[in-house]
Length: 308
Image (cartoon, rainbow, N blue to C red):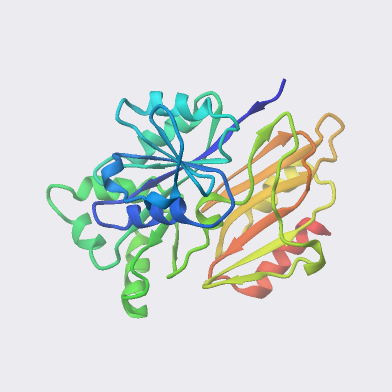
């Protein structure tokens, strides 16, 4: 009998950075994905009453396929309730309190039935350096940035390019995370495309193959889809490790050349990557999301290494 592993993305960031804005976008979005969200308290997230659907227990169901759960009795209870849903969600998003430790929360993503998909920390470019130097909260703010896989700069619609460049330069000395910004960040940048399963086919939802793998535009980010031939784990690992600057997220499946493995699941979040064995999925496609900092020729050459 197969066991579903629900990917977990942890959202952190200091008070007022923009976490609730992102959570609200997930909860109210017309994205067609069954996503569960655990928030600190329902009062922190204003949910449109028209989105609410019948529910029971501590989980509130939404009409768009999402569910929202307040961790009032602790994460263990919330995770148990969400894992018991039928059908289970495709992804779990956990919002950490502004003064919380996202890495400590991320360890819950390694419990049975779940797997850690990444730690995303939101930073306000107008405030982050001041907060990081604050005598009282500075250590906590810097720790949040240090443990992140991705740092999303908020308020891109009101901050100038010079300020963003200055903050990005400063962040390079604080964290190894990949830094991205944009006024309309694609949801796949935060969650990754598709659902990870163990023991049954998975839905990657790649773009139409007739596109020829050409990138899809989305603000300052582009989505590239490739359909790789059979590869070895060593080759897939090396390919992920050699990703050029500007590659923000990678997720998908490649057929395996090894006799005892059907397919490899490839994932890269920021600079952290993994290759794990998997049953043959419904679609062996790999989706790559790049930021505006990516050099197209280098990305194309790197993508070609996987498919040729």
